[in-house]
Amino acid sequence: MNSTVPAIRISGLTKSYGETEVLHGIDLEFASGEVTCLIGPSGSGKSTLLRCIAFLEEATNGLISIEGEALGFAMGPGGNRIRLPQAEVRAVRSRIGMVFQQFNLWPHMTALGNVAEALVTVRGMSRSDAEARATRELERVGLGHRAGHYPAQLSGGQQQRVAIARALALDPRIMLFDEPTSSLDPELTGEVLNVMRQLADDGMTMLVVSHEIGFAASVGSKIVFLDQGKVLLEGSPTEVFGKPRHPRIDQFLDTYLDRGAATLI
Image 1 (tube, rainbow, N blue to C red):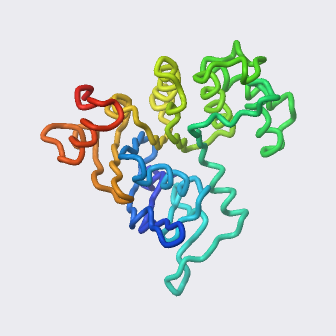
Image 2 (tube, rainbow, N blue to C red):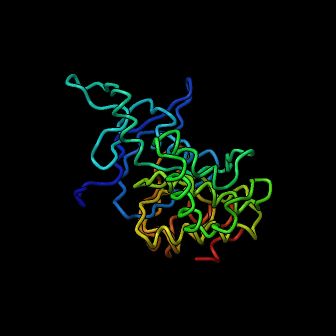
């Protein structure tokens, strides 16, 4: 891919549920290899934006491109959006992996089975090849020794790492994380964030919706602050978190999440 082409480009994106518009004219670009942290108060549209990028939700208006190729819709000759064929949508979506708040593991399958299953059913790999690939990905997230364990035998942090391995097994070029530690006890959060730090070090393009301000400030190459469905601020961690700060950021840091997150940065 041409390095000058954004990994993700979002133009004029809106999203409505009935009469309620929750995203208002979002314009953003994310470079290849960049780690972008999406922060903001609850209800600001962060998860909805991520789901639109993954095409789990269809934007009401606007366009999204992945590595220069339109996702879902393109601009037609008359200036209206046109829906692209499903085969094209699937091809572009295959470049994106997503990790959710909930782990969504199959309880009747081992960690190995959970990671291998999509390789068999989606990619058509043989079971032996899929399990070999799944083993490598479990080792990558530090869980090679737990491959034969079922989800009920794993901690929450381990289950989330299995979910990350499952997404990585499909060889995505872009990883989306939707509050991946919000369901974890604080003491288990670190092991998931460490895996994400390693992915960042490896050059993975990542968009992360997170309440972990310390992670955003230390790992993020870009911070996007959403408020009431709009991009209020966008910049490097130094630009967004550095003093003097935008008053809305100060209010957010002082009253939200870590209850004193301003002391972390």
